[in-house]
Image (cartoon, rainbow, N blue to C red; front, side, top):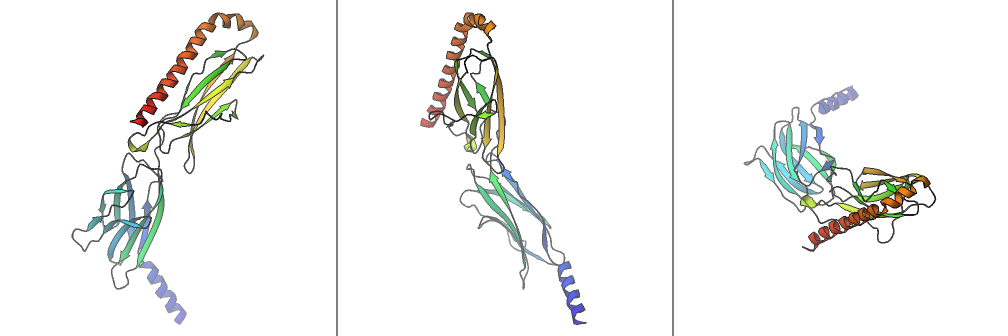
Length: 276
């Protein structure tokens, strides 16, 4: 008999318990615009005392319906709280993420009125990321080359946060960078976004014909990684085409010089932004 009474008491307690029914926190947040977080809860026969939002261990928002004003905002290092709204069964808060690639825990905590002041709490993580809008761009890839020739390619990624890392592939084989071929970064844009670029020198194998497929891969190192790529096909002259190649060689050399000049000018322009 005592066991039945205890079981009935536990069932009643569970039925009347308050709880968070849904916590919405974006997986990724763009530093150029506010992120919206929402917490939905169910009180049953309990009376709501307060709703609090935390970023990691720091309180950033509090809703207490018995106080005037009922909503208080707390700006902490690395985040700006723009505002929030609360209803009978939900509370929403808008935050402006910092222009730094960071990952933080956001928690919603609801509590009941006394004397028990029972608490329910849920947590989700949000990472500050600005995704690239476009695929990377390859500059300097001629349509036709002569076996044994050397060409210089440049791959530039779109602006993102964090900046993309760049890998080069030739026929699906990753190319190990030379010491001076490291990934370079542009000056920061609004929100801390940067473009990145990397040069690749290609030595076309001698006495070959066919085509080379070069591919540039821009990798955003988040969890999971975001990859965008672009490729170009470079055709190798056959023996029967060498005479045509010789006749057009002057034009090809002029084009190569122009491409290299464009790459140098673009790089100098970005470096000037940094110095300013």
